[in-house]
Length: 590
Ligand SMILES: [Zn+2]
Ligand SMILES: [Zn+2]
Image (tube, rainbow, N blue to C red; front, side, top):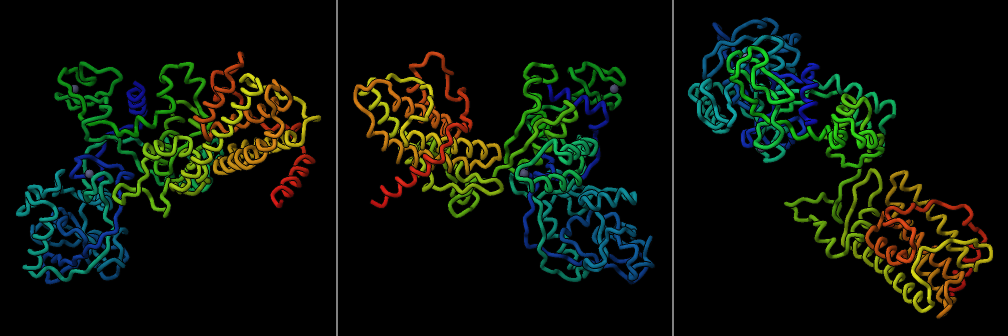
């Protein structure tokens, strides 16, 4: 419903239109591809130099092309207006080889005097630059390659051939007629379908477009003025580059799934009816003979509405009021444009406000050799498999430790093994505590913290360390430095809480002691540390916290709902830290 509403509103505003457009077409997937769905592959190819005879003269022009089969659709040759070699030929006529069509020589700045001979063939129906040039010079577009990649009837003797077969035959025929001057090896950047890797065929077709310039301007503005911030910062530049050069967005797709375009074509008058509800009649002539457009919308069209469509928009729901805008979006850079930029544009257009205030761009997860994981390389770490093997918390901890902003995450088995050991360390410490509690006659509960002035050194020390840990972790999280948060927690829990504090505390715990000061401090420190660790290792901390908290009546249902520990200045105790350091040195060196 939101999708339809947005489509209709944009259409009524003149921001959605149907247009003849040079699109990237995949002859295998039979669909239009957006610029972003095309990948460029450096591929060895050839540059064929072909003679185009001038009409009524012995002279000829030599054009260079990487796609000789498209010459069947040539409707002009172009030279640069300032190119001295060809100044006398502006407006002359050449005879298109093989087909014998008469085509003009035009002057257009897009012809690069440095490329080949400085003469280019112009194929408005099969090349984006030529399409533009064709518009400038009013050239006919002759479609010689169809949607399946075969030569059309316009291709004369080549009709019905696959485009690559046609290339061979065209070259052979040119050669036989003495019109092939030379063939040079030439590396080209071949555009391919992102999904199936078939070379893209630029085709002219009628598609639906969103006019993006008016939407992009406010979307640039909000990033300029800092209402939306990218982290790491360097993505801002990439965003601007893309937004300043944005082209209209082709939103129609020829697929079997997706949102159908809410437009109906009239058989009587040819008019288009765009409507929120399925119409019965043509809005132009009233005819009942209307048919819905067979195309569906690009999936990114509905994804762009996600921040408000999921909250019930266009209804003014409570959720919408409460959760729009959100504070933070976390995503990968590969969908920064597909998704993030478009959410910003649509959010500003339909909600009048940014959809989120900060965008955190995380790295890719790579293997130990820093290779991108891919199925073909066989270096993919299956998250479900390693979760089974090492535990969810260990995998999460491993990812966090590698998650420095602006870098990719290197995920290795070694790191997951270490994280599993860390989880075991915590588990064993907890098991020890629970056993000792039982022996001491202490009921599981969430303890009250108490004044530390009179407490023994190890208590004053661990609370001082806990305070520092909370301070560092909170700061790291606020700055998206998750790896620092993870490392700080790791160090505190393992090397301070388990290795020293619990060991020292063991000496003081007595059977049947009941809940005394030692227990209150020990349990307070442990419970606080669990809450601090919870975002990094949610499962183990929840499990242990539940066991510990079960005796407390008034408690949150989950550790996730308990307050996140903040630094507490009154716990800071530099003197205790100094004395403890000394003690540690003595013990370690002994
Ligand atoms: Zn394809
Ligand atoms: Zn009609």
